[in-house]
Image 1 (cartoon, one colour):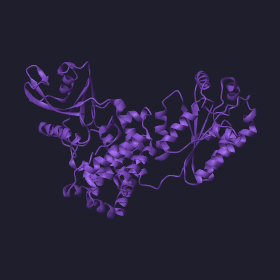
Image 2 (image 1 turned 30 degrees about the horizontal axis):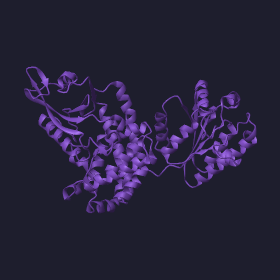
Image 3 (image 1 turned 45 degrees about the vertical axis):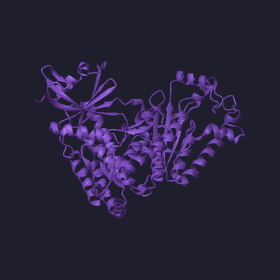
Image 4 (image 1 turned 45 degrees about the horizontal axis):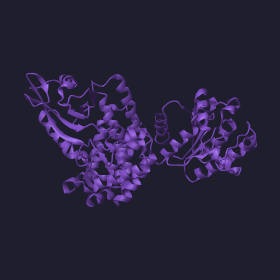
Amino acid sequence: MSRSLDDLIRAMSDPAIYPHRPAGVEVIQTHISVVFIAGDLVYKVKKPVNFGFLDYTTLEKRQHFCHQEVILNSRFSERIYLGVVEICSGPGGINLRGGGDAVEAAVVMRHIPQDRTMIRMLEDDKITPEILDRLADRLAFFHSVAATGPEISLFGSSDVIRRNLAENFEQTVPFVGSTIDRETHEAVVSLSFAFLETHEDLIAMRMKGGFIRDCHGDLHLEHVVILDEIMLYDCIEFNDRFRYSDTASDLGFLLMDLDFRGYPAYADRIARRYARTSGDRDVLKLLGLYRSYRAFVRGKVLSFSLEEPEISPEEKAAAAGTATDYFRLARSYLVPPLHPALIVTSGLMASGKSFMAAQLAKRLGIVPLRSDEVRKELHGLTPAEHQLDKFRQGIYTPGATDLTYRALLDEARRELEQGKSVIVDASFSRLADRKAALEVAQAAGARFRLIECTAPDDVIRSRLTARAGKRDEPSDGRWEIFPQHKAAYEPVRAEESSYHGIWDSTTSLNLFLTSFVRELLFF
């Protein structure tokens, strides 16, 4: 006896069907599953689909893979996966009590607190260096105890990797011209195979050294849960060869996702910590290929979703754009590193410049140069010493400002010449100072970006009032001089548009920085 997927979704959207009687049910669809969030429990049903690499077309197969999902994920988590339940159909309709014939199966899980997933904690700015180190250590441990052996090791051979790459490239051909342009597709194909050929000896050594293991296979940020222990969930159960891989490939997925979200410094810290903890120094040599492979797979999977009838036109448009970004990211890992960048802020006092610069600096792993601190150092003051001079007087005369910007750009020049990117946190209210910064970048062969921060006057006034009571705040900006400051500000001109971006500081900084870092580092 069988019912359509639509009938099943309709029945399981009713809270009354569940033994624990949740207050409501949230339904989430992916291209391979339907997830029912029913209070503190989650029921996950596999769709009857066949993508070649995945086959859920019969009830027996779906039941089997439900059990596999529980068994395999229990390696990485405790008390999240509770088991498999039969979905039955009897005289009263579809039920979860076992009455009637089994028509489907569902994995039952505890509802994971979303505010403890790594992706959410990144958005909430709660990821610390200590958490990154714990994650690297935990992953190194998982890999050290994961199953290996002659059969599994075969999946790390150059021939298998080459076939996996070729399959990816072939399966994405239908999307050339939609989610991936032909030039990007051809570049990733040629560069991937060239990388593989160059590193064949190292890959063979890793096969013999036991680095090919039964890994997670789908290790992106949504699948990392940070509780008392760091746990992983939702590993690949539907195809062994997607889990059997070099541990560098498993690590590469996580790092790629951090890069894509705009946190390359976090990815770098995890990679280096993992190499130290695991003793696997060679892992760093292979991450370019495996990060590229993982990014390409993400682009492919999102491209597949465009063919799903359940996905709305708006969701398809968003998925297509994200897939394109993943494909571009895949290419970026296989080409020489980009030149460093000089990033300068611009905007009125209290428009969010220092906050934005500090958050961007964390993502890029650099320390911003802050004009408020440099100015006071030049005048023998500590950052916390306030100089409440009148507008353009005291340490804020035009001459003092010239001296401050020369010092900032001299330091920026030294950093750029060492191949390091630089963030200069200053108002850059004068066109001449912005031009001088551009010239420094050009002379060093660096890229140049100008981020203008904005906020309504009433918001600025509120911020300046709140700031006045902070002892450790180096800025001397205050509302009584704001009108003169605003009147003297020289707006960004059209000629600066090629390197100019704007952030309204009353909107999401996370969205702005994710987009900015992607463009800066990868595209």
